[in-house]
Image (cartoon, rainbow, N blue to C red; front, side, top):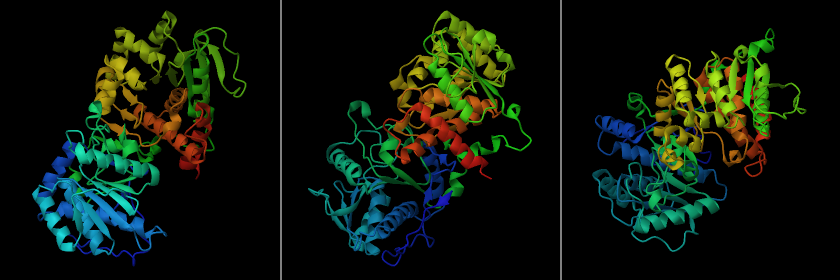
Length: 542
């Protein structure tokens, strides 16, 4: 993990002294790091164990100091902030409000003007201590929000942290709206730990079914460790840029089993094949993309093109329907066949389901393919066939139980069909849905969506941080299937192939968007050339 860049104008905003720790707080960027993602239960255990060996108020003091450091650095790096505009902080009635009050004290002592709005006075002992510290530091505290936020620089959300069980109400709901509007229009809204109103485990808004609300921040400094809800569902939009402040409890945190990890190249890079001079096309495997009923050959060809760009040695397309073209003019390297003419058992991997349809012929082909001792990815129509046919589902589960897991890549609607529920049920707890799918099918599951989850039957879970709204267009799922299929053909284990596939697929969308080719109007076919560029730049440049 990399420490955040320190301020370059330190003389203007010197850090305040603290009686709890001599060392400056560490701020970590989660980019490209396989961070542990801690559930609410994990965090409660860590807090309890850490506090047992520390003086009172230490964790709150460290959290507040870390967030204050972030603000000092941001203000120092802003050439227009001389002198800095007043930082406005809202403090809630619990410990998140206490964290906010420590931030205020630290900024006040550093010479940065600050105002605190505390609509309801804080109640817990730690937070009462922080309130006394803020008053002693001379922080201006009021119970009434301002009528306008125009004169303020940064706005800080310290209303509610993890563990919130009911929707925001009254003045807190109103302030959440104002903070969110500011974040969307001007940025410079910092959430402490999590945006108020966000469920840190699921990424959903607390009480969303009852018109719940939450703060949309431009930045979040999260304490102790990263939380899954910051990287999936609504959390991706609400949290903004996430910075982790471990607050010096890393040793305690290492003793708990995290809910999952954040996907990163370190989890899969060592499994990618070497590209030595002595290699040949056979070294990188043969993939067959199986699908394409009559009138639907575009989907498997799109997947096959992506496989070609991801480095598979040879790529075949096995088509179920009639009327398909004899070859793909933009990519004559692809070999197109009627499905009965291609010996699928000779392939190194199979990607099945793109444009496959739901006719009896598709069921028979899937049934035949499941009997083959070849690594397999099942997507799209293949998943719908599993959901509709218990015997096919049982065969997938049996293969997984024998140590030959398939890779299943459902979006939420397909996941709902596989689990016998609906998409909203899946989205309410994506991690639980992924667990249920791995248990039912003994397979590696790629639960697509905002914060794609990759889950293995052995209990490994990763949440993917790459990707954006550019992927919300037809055919991007077919491209992902082709990418993962190509990696399976290159002998990556199923879990690592899935990790690499979703990471590169999302990063391609991010990179193209940064270049101005998205998020609006990006086409699925544009992803594969960028995947090739990223694969070579990141892993084969040397």
